[in-house]
Structures are given as C-alpha cells and as structure tokens.
Length: 268
Image (cartoon, rainbow, N blue to C red; front, side, top):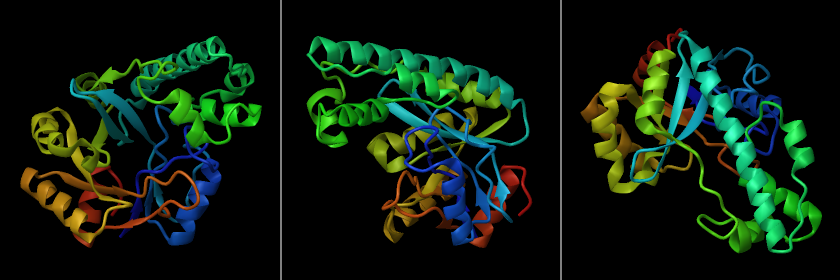
C-alpha cells in the first residue's frame, strides 16, 4: 500500500502549492494521503488526490523538556475545531516572532520588510525560511543557507525562541479533538525516541513514522521492530518539501496499511 502522511506545501515551509503536492502524490498512485504543514491546515481543502483517501492533518512542534518534538496529528472524525483554534494562537506567535526577528536584523543594519509577507500569509504558518527568502530577495544575502549561517541560526543574535506547546499539552489537545497522533522522523530524537514513545503511548502517541522517506531498508526495519515491540501503528511519509526531496509516497505492507486505515477511521 502506497501512503503519504507527511508532506509540506507553501502553506508552511514547502516550495510547491497544496495542489502541486497532491498532484505529485497522485502521479505515484498514493492510496492514503495527508498534507501535514507546520501548525496549519490551510492547504488541506485544496490538497485532493483523486482515487485516494484524504485525511486532514498537521505537523505540530512541541517540547518534551529535553528538546523539540514533532507530532503528526490526523483527523479521525472528532472535534478537530478544538485543535484548529489552538493552532491559530500558535500561528499568531509565529507572526510575532518574525516581526521581532526583522527588528533584530535592523539593529544589525539589515532592513527587510516583513509587512507584505504577513499581510498575504492569511492562514499560512510563517517561519525563518520565509524571512531568509526575503533577505535573498532584498539582496542582503546570497542564499537562504547564508541567511541562516550568518544571521538566523538557532540561538543566534537574531533568533527568537518558539513559544512552543509542551508535548503533554499537544497530546491532551489531540485526544480532546479525537486526533490520531504519530511521532515524526523518530531518528532525530536519538536515544530519547524509545523512552519518549514508551512514556507517552498511553497519552495518545500511538504511532511512529517507521517508514520515513529518507530511511533505508535497515532503518525502516529498526523502527518497525520498535513499533511491534510497543504495539504502535506504523505510519509513513516522505517529508516532501521541494523538488529534489524523496517524492511523495512510501510503501507499507498490506497488514500495516490495513491497521493504519482502521486507526484513522478510513476504509482499507
């Protein structure tokens, strides 16, 4: 079963529109699809894959006390508006963050006007990549990479910490909204991943992205084994952001696909 449950569009930090991302998934024959932009579902209505089951979803950044954790939340037919309302607050915080970062750039003699970007953002989640692209357009840096390496890097003189939700709060919010939740790209958490999944499984973190786009066969076996040991649902996605990334669509076994579809309240 070919699924795509982790990909991004221009509604957050992706390079293609929701329609274009969905078209790439359709071209690969994806049977189960979700657009998972950061902290927003603004592109969900437009991201339609003909012939596929389409799930409204979002990738949420949160903190477990030891660092940032990314949770993929999928709408399984509950009170999704509860989650949407809280994400609206997160997006406001993102906008304020960009405004402060632009002010810090001015203090360094770099003038970038974020006003037009924020005006046209609407329900889109904005972030440092947007500011970096504005810096390139303004000619103050030669590339997005240079913008980050010289100015926007984590805990640098321009960076402003995210006002992130705690992992416990996100899981509680997801449960209240009837969402199904999976840990994204588990390799990023190193030795934290397994205890994190063990600790929070009973709080709604019932899935793990064992079939992440860039993983080789050995890495997928490793996370599938952990999913089996903890009785977690195997989820999968490419984490597609732009052409050149792994294309939308990862392969699950028939048994994994059937369990995933049932977990999401969808037809197998």
